[in-house]
Length: 212
Length: 212
Image: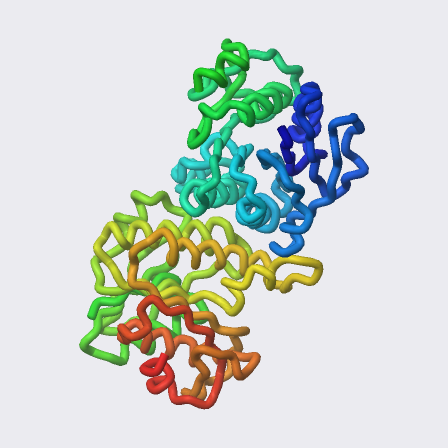
């Protein structure tokens, strides 16, 4: 299977590429602004992509693939260009390229408007609004076979291999757990059309994803 | 006719309320975060609205009306909360309130993605992205009777009463001209479903809108 990862040098993206590369039957097409920073492996092919680019340039940059995982983010520094418009441009151009499977790394509360409105909004309100409109574009304005993963706060703790999918049982998410869940989701058609809350939890990842 | 103006204390909103108030048959429901700053007139009724509010609060704040003109903006300071999510929340809650007519003050290039992407994007790129997704929400995700006005750069010059609608013949737009065009559009059903570029020009406003 040919799998594109957008944001391959990010905190989640790096671990995601490494996890996907463990399956030697797959080819990982790892996209980032600085492709020279992407890990080297026989089945990992780096490519340059800049989410500020025009749609025509993005279409040219995207390789052919069976699926795409969007794991890019600006860390709050460029939300409108990267997290919102960058994501939507990739959806549009991926569809033109014939890539039908789209896995979105989103966030807890991206589809809960009251979390980012009112007198006491989330400290991540602007980030959540950007993810909100990107997620809704994917759901409402594309025909892509999407899965939207909504983890809680990401932590640098080692992966436990055990998670909760569909509900939150914990405030935290090991980044490694998130990467491993994304790697499983992209091969699990039962997750198509689903919006999946996620936290660290008690269920082995393989079971959690297959029962999602 | 009962007409809501959102952003009634803004640069365009102030002049818009004043223009609409000239027709004594109309009632102007002028919404702003600081309603005490809204002009006093027999047919102008101020109300408080904060675009950061939850959807439920916005529904309670919005009065009954025949039409709504969205002229609010954060001046680039709070684009995700105000210009994007604030606008979309108002669309959703206005529709719930039975307000079918929605006039959006947008901007030149709000629907031209290449203007805010690539190596040399507009200096207003972030603003344009916020307006882009607000405008597209109005077009794609509502059944409101919309008109989207796309003026070029706003200037403090006095209104000439003459404009170009449908194409750009000038770099500038007198704010007074923009306000007067919005006041005409809200009463002109021929503009429903239209996206109207606008600059200062050579055609009297009444003619330009009726031929739009």
